[in-house]
Image 1 (tube, rainbow, N blue to C red):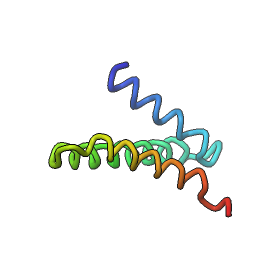
Image 2 (cartoon, rainbow, N blue to C red; image 1 turned 180 degrees about the horizontal axis):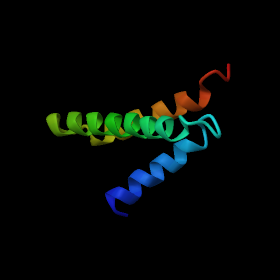
Image 3 (spheres, rainbow, N blue to C red; image 1 turned 90 degrees about the vertical axis):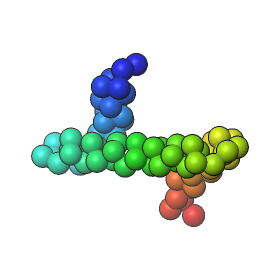
Image 4 (tube, rainbow, N blue to C red; image 1 turned 90 degrees about the horizontal axis):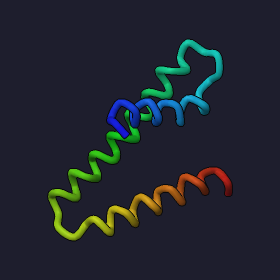
Length: 74
């Protein structure tokens, strides 16, 4: 998958959760995709700065996903 295809895929994934038929639908989805990519890049930068963090990084993102799934379900 090319970077352009991945960018489009991410926007498409977020667009379904934005206000429908709104002039902000695409900008909101794009901003969400950018936030996600920036978080991944930040984590990758930390990985490069510290040895042996690949596994910890993977576990961290799995825990973040779990917290998101549980968010406001209490």
